Image (cartoon, rainbow, N blue to C red; front, side, top):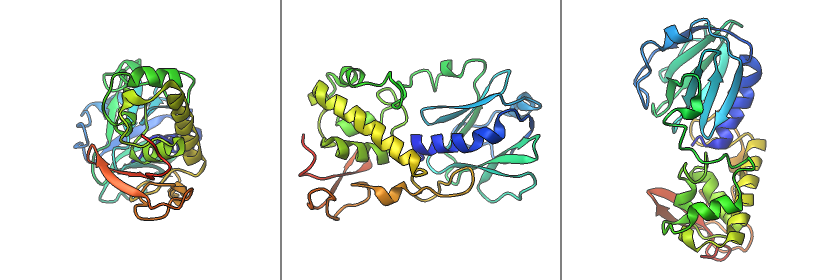
Length: 272
């Protein structure tokens, strides 16, 4: 958290304000993020014009003419659009000041986010190059998923959270998609047939699109670029509902841990 929907919502909120604006200054108050912010980054960005705002998986990409600025929200981060001169708080680590009189502020209480320069082609950067196809684009299909899961004995839920299998799906939406597809999260990946993989792909797409439409999930710290929380958490089918009745069959939602992450499922609706 934040996952793909939250990053996409942030991108859509920032895009109309950033596109065409120039970067007046980059202010770094805390370099110690997931990876240290490069000391020369303010100089590299100074005066650059933002041509477009893209997303790859959970990474936000800003085309700055002579290269790309890449930002990641980590586990607790958010990017907000504010008037220039807005006083920073304790966890406001990076400000991107714009020629429009606005700023984009990275707030990250746990400091697992990232801000770095990716050069002329961000998709060749070591952090982005291994990413799997985007789950909302045609390259991510039942055939792709079945091929990638073949021979893997790990639980399918853990595999969905691996960025070389699916790009951008984290814990919340893996739980929700597996429920919608009727697949038990502990099912070994290699046991999924082509038809179940196709059904899972559609469930992932439907879940992510529904989350984007609802403004994402606001658990703990996430807000959109306008400071407003999402409300998809009000529509969870299994996530964080342990002990509550299944909305489909009425059985109690169960919980376990896979890869040290909380996992929720209905033993009646989801089959191995």
